[in-house]
Length: 613
Image (cartoon, rainbow, N blue to C red; front, side, top):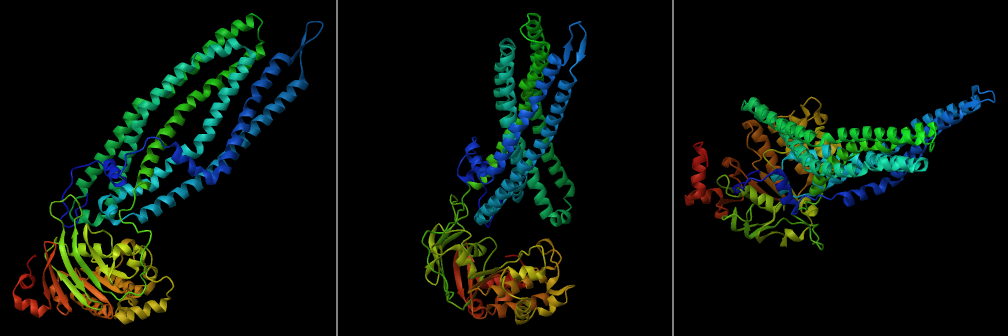
């Protein structure tokens, strides 16, 4: 679990326990009634696939009928006792066999096309639904959840549902139809043969129950271990620079190998405990053939059935018992798919911690008055000491306020509360006298701009990243904004200017270049309230001057809250507030606070001497 500010460390919990805590409910075992509605939009494809399977089964049963007719009636005995072939019957039988084979292959293709089309639609719709749900979850969920686990849910777990939801129902119906029709035909040929095979059914039902019981928990463990190494892989890709910089490739590889080993062991354990089912059904099929030969031979000897009927019965036995061997694969798909579905729905059941009220206040013409009124907040509500403790702070519209203080004392937390990424446990955060809880999150954040130390640029061009702030703006609008901030010359000198690819997370640009692009993006959004959280750190002096010029232009005419460690950058602020232990301990201009020789003066002297504070 990530630590934010001085969040206390919680007891160690498994990933699933954490997800259950976020969802505020246990992992559900019964998934059938939750999966069924997903098929409603593609019910025509599913029904078409089922109809194709029914017709396919009917073609399958034509073959033993033709064989029976050829054996019993294909030889014609003359009056003299000689035998001759009934070429007319044999020709029709061969034609019928050809048509049945062609129909079987044709219908199999139709069934695959329909089920595949349904699969694409259902899975893509589910992916979009999960993605949309994830976007609406509160920031706190992402602070406490590994990104790789979320990726695993949307990608691998959704893929695992295809065999269960799309391929499974038609194949299961086909297997049941073949067994049922074969059983009926066997009964019509000889009740003795049917009853001899029916004695195997109790063994099948018992084995099926045992297989499901053993496999269900094992497949859940396999899916969980797969999600763990996927999460580690995603985090490794995201943090590859840090791994290389700290020379941790070997230890990281060992960690990944250990996760893969856990996955392999759970997979082997699952195979050992569940792999016997297919072999057991093969034994049942062999036993069924033995019973057929014994009882069928007796029935032929007694004249109760013909040789042709016995030959057809052999096909019916395979069709009656053959699906038993398919049940192992079908159950494997079912259990694997259910294990994935349980995790997907656990994610979908996770509700946003921050939710808008049914009736929200209008929030259009914002002046920019900000007030923190007796605010109390802790990332962990059970913590003995909250991060913010009865904090009071008023920021008039248009004022530039700098917030300083030691690391971990709640400065950045105020940003989280003002943007309503987290909610206060007591007190209130107000804008223009309105509690932010009474304002729709979308409206609130459209009027509050944030520029962080490590801003995010998405893969694409600078032009495309700027469009996030104003999709309707033209390239000339972007140039005008950059010129207003005094950074157009830096962007224009890039290889392709505003159409330069920034790379993943802006990796093709320097840190300073990324900050300048983000400042232009904030300028285009034109927020009434601007928050600059460590926006000038980790850049060179020349770039810092550019950023400082851009910041002064950006802060004009709006409320600005600046959080900075480099105290020289906030000397010109209208007011400076010092935060210690989650409280405002000093307020005033730079000169006034220096004269007081209090906390701010101590921080400033420590900064001048290059010390940590």
